[in-house]
Amino acid sequence: MNLTLKVWRQKNANSKGELKTYHVKDISPDMSFLEMFDVLNEELLLKGEDPIAFDHDCREGICGMCSMYINGHPHGPEQTTTCQLHMRSFKDGDTIVVEPWRAKAFPVVKDLVVDRSAFDRIIQAGGYISVNTGNAPDANEIPISKEVADAAFNAATCIGCGACVAACKNASAMLFVSAKVAQLSMLPQGQIERKRRVEQMVAKMDEEGFGACTNTGACAAECPKEISLANIAILNREYLIAKATSEYV
Amino acid sequence: MNWFTKTFTSTIGRKVIVALTGLFLCLFLVVHLLGNLQLLANDGGKSFNTYAKFMAESPLIRVVSIGNFAFILLHIIQSVILTMQNRQARPVQYAIVASNASWASRNMGFLGSFILLFIVGHLSQFWWQAKFGAMPTIAIDGVQMKDLYLVVHKAFQNPFIVVFYVLAMGFIGFHLSHGFQSAFQTLGLNHVKYTPLIQKLGLAFCILIPLGYAVIPVMMYLRSM
Ligand code: HEM
Ligand code: SF4
Ligand code: FES
Image (tube, rainbow over all chains, first blue to last red; front, side):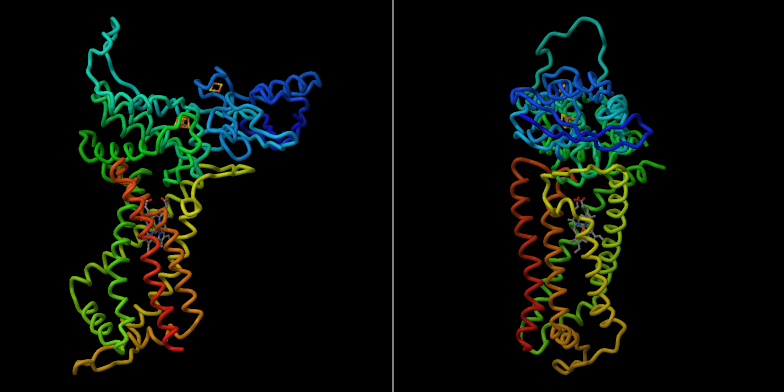
């Protein structure tokens, strides 16, 4: 496959970036999108040019690092991560536009790399449970029904990739925050900090400059882990109940 | 800030205000439509004028109408603040956007702004006129009352006004095609048993209610031809 790429190049957080055009030749349809970028970067290195900076780690769809906004979709045309996207999803001769996640809360570090530590700070604000350390507790010591375990597990599959923020016209982080809040609020282990958690995570989310949810559903349609919009309703509910009944004034 | 102001200045809190006021306005739309359909009664305005007189004189309706104005204002203020915050959350735009969200859900601010334009036009034409303008009067069953029917009847002889009304109802329909079901999600109601019902109800609501309103100017225009 021969392709034309238009890739966002930006030296650092303060410089102005632009889309630059590259041509790649003889790309195998079985390559992943990141492998195609590896090929391009090797060519750039051989020519003595600065390779394109992009985030990646596991390359097996579980770490959430590989943020690329491809032809108007986070992670490209398939509902998966960029590392699991294959070149067979494109046609020979295609022009592919690759941009970084765009959000005030996710500033560009370089080229396609953005700083997603705002997510970490939201987790630090309340996305945890307090347990005594020591021996690992027995499995199945706390009975949890199959339905609750499944729902909590589905929410827990969120890998913090930020595609929801990238897809949302408001750069809202509600799907991410809702996945974390829903997961912990359903489980017995999450009850102790239940109200405090949702109040603090939402406050942090707002403080970091993410937008508000307008229920367009663009996030869930792009989420590689198929986190459901129902979690956002759970988040809204948890937040309102916590605000009305918690001891924190 | 205390907990109360913190709650209602958070993104979720503001959204809840938009949702609650929006649902109240939906209720208003139903009641207002039921009253206005009397314009089509073909009785020279007898039932409509009697109804309008009752509405203008009832203290209960007065309270509800003040609440209604306040809610519209609140709905607008909060949605404008949210829309501005949402714009700021993405200072640099994408070169290409291929959204898979519905058109209405992405353009609520634009749809709402047109509805606001309509509300202002509609109020100055009928409400302001009925309250403060020089009104023709009519005697119905020996009682002298304002002839609001005649004012409406005259207005809808103008095809431009009729088109403006029909168009505005289309905008309300689109606004509600997203807004109705969105409001329940905002209030935290998303459930396998109820959400499909809410979505069907929302679809019926956003088609039938604006259609019911649009029929009034169109019928009155056709009858006066
Ligand atoms: C007939 C009058 C109106 C009705 C019945 C109505 C109804 C609604 C409803 C039910 C919602 C959904 C709330 C939610 O998503 O939680 C909504 C949202 C909204 N409305 Fe209205 N509205 C009306 C007029 C207006 C006006 C005049 C404006 C603006 C000038 C406006 C702007 C908005 C905006 C920006 C949203 C937020 C969209 C979103 O969150 O997705 N609306 N409206
Ligand atoms: S909710 Fe989905 S899109 Fe958002 S961070 Fe989690 S896995 Fe990524
Ligand atoms: S590189 Fe880990 S999910 Fe793509």
